[in-house]
Image (tube, rainbow, N blue to C red; front, side, top):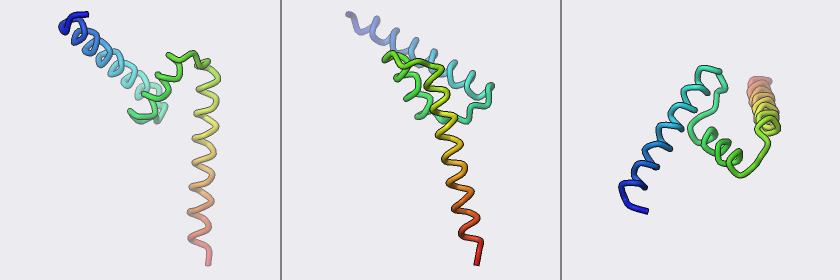
Amino acid sequence: MSSSTKLSQIKEAKETFQALMEISKLLGTGLDVETLSICVRLCEAGVNPEVLATVVRELKKEVGSTSDEAASGSTQV
């Protein structure tokens, strides 16, 4: 594989990821670049996207409820 072919593939991958990030923002997923990247790699590895979306939603709920509990616990005297 030539270096120009490799550079072309890298450029295409970056453009594709930027498009995915824009779609993610438009859909209001709340995913940051690192999390979206991990999700893409998991899908490329064969993880079912619907199952992955369910797991991400559940994790976000869990983190939200943990944050709420921590905030309410710190304000109680």
